[in-house]
Length: 324
Image: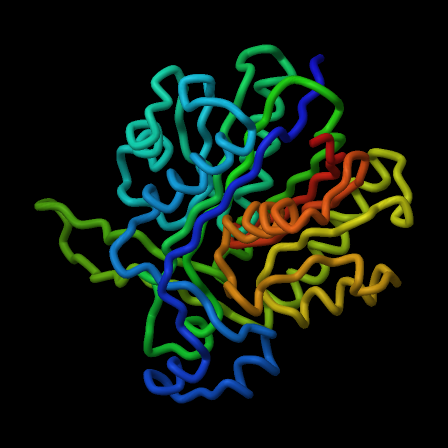
């Protein structure tokens, strides 16, 4: 089996910043209410760009960072819960935009854990020698599936995209872990379209908007992230003290604080940028990783845990060694 490493990162967010104070003019809320419960201060909202456009811009930046061209990519996987369309896949649309003419393209649907699922999927393809160079993107325009009258959800989410380029090389992707629980999928849900046809006796109209049981998701998230981190550490025989950074799904600062407490480690080990972007679902982890890369925080040899949870319910983690 071949080794796989990250050789480039990229990200893109829309220009429009929406603050908590602006949201207080739309729904009954306040900066204090949002900040104290989530840690979020502002988020980016797309005014016209769709998910594929955000994904393509992040992907091109990752390709440039890897010092490659789009034609060098032979696999494109996009993790998203807010695609442009049922078909074609967002990944196919990205291929057309960036000119990755040699790539096989498909999407992964695992909500906020989607990037980890996509990263692990691409890693396995490269390990077996099926493909050589993969572009893995997490991209979301969640603003189009928000109920902007529901303050329990609309204040939490934002739009954005992050990407990495993977290639055969050093052992950069050390270990990954994934899990799912469809029984409790109702806790975080966004329906598509109703079952409607000329033969149906009744058609129940469905609104494609996100709904969430915040209390249940919070309990699930803390347990899932804690277990995921412990699982990859045990499987890779790496001690938590040897981890330089943990890059968590950026959903809620309280969740991250609870996980740090359960693991008995300092919050300093966690990279957090949710105050600037909110919860961008499948984009949060690669967006954060690219920000760290741009800031020069990541040094060759650093060991990093990527960990997330999301609708499905899904969860997962990956331990990577930085080789750039």
